[in-house]
Image (cartoon, rainbow, N blue to C red; front, side):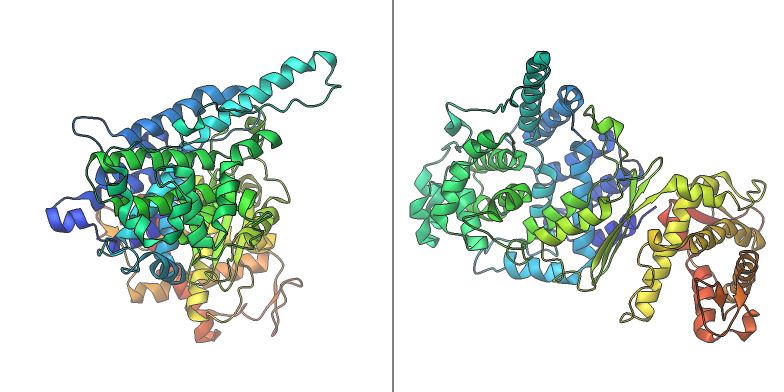
Length: 586
């Protein structure tokens, strides 16, 4: 019901894939279709197709072997499904990572400010001469690795939580009067994980990178933690020795404080695996030391920026997009992606979670509304999400007209909808099922068109949740009347993709006739709700200057009614529906 499908199509329309152009492959179409299929039904099976499409298109694997990255992700899925059921807090990360991937593509595609930040930081040929020349592919590659792999180390965190849960239970025989047990993971040979196999001579593999930076004398370029420290030194300007010590000591810090940062392990795993495979396949070492290291450091930062970089001795402030564009986007999308995350943990299963989200992404604004089917999210949820992102990221540089987070319970809308007559003979069942979603989509589209027409004027109600009940009801009335308008013209609403003649645009002569119909309906709804005519609008007193016949309206107000009609195909597309010409009416 949101704009993600449209945003994704916009992104792929601009993307160029080198293998398609140079060697006649169809990788872009392969990945795009997998993403669109996933958006139709966000299941693990569809998520797997996205993983396979991306990592098969950008595969680095030994001849005759399966794709190792898919195998790695299968381990994550298995741990979540089986091992997480006995701990208190645990939600899906397998589908979540695909949604993060998609959300990042949408932000990149819709926001020129972010694209400029990425280009300025990552597309400098004097720094990395082997970046893709094809449009947007360098971002696509780096972002795919970062987003799809950012939680691959989560099984380590699951194991840690299981140990803590069991130890708390074992100690509870005394009634829990003693001190809490702090359990932790400890490694006798951590270097076995924190090392990259030397497939080709180390000097040959590391030479160009080592010679470029004098500071490489302080690090071992075949140790993931040292590589990450060096990358953060370059990106964030932090002292190299201090960040290397912080990362070297991080396992001990996690143990002492009783937590596990899975992003730390995810980043190490990505570097270890890619380092081995790039050497084994005789690819250019630069492919590892630039795009892969950039993505791995973003994976580290998606938690470590808050847990380490913002604390002494670094005490960095909000992350700016040009400091580390991929990390900035990963933090944003990881924090925002709260919908359709299956709960595995004991306590999480009892909580209300967002089933869907409605998003509006422009060059200037970001609006996210989380939708619950039953129950409501905690009252402070939206404010906490806004505050957290505002503390972690410099949002103003990308969304200069602000970002907002809201929550809406669909069952509360259903109560409002109860007053609308539901004539199933006229109103198709799919619309009944999507009435609440359609009402929210109507408001989003109204705001988008308003911003296009008057970009400097602030929105009166940025989110559907901000509307008073009377205006929510008005949107519900408009959603309900769509079927009536279609019926008048010999059209009907059906699910997208089924055979038939689809209307992609409403003819202008019909727009005017239906705009009159829409205004008359609106006047009836307002009058029945107690509104009266007055020269100055006052929503609280239910006074409107527009309770007049259509022909007496100004052209500006008539355009709003016309937009309502023109927008019908786009509106239906947002909820997976389309307008079809009825048989015999073409």
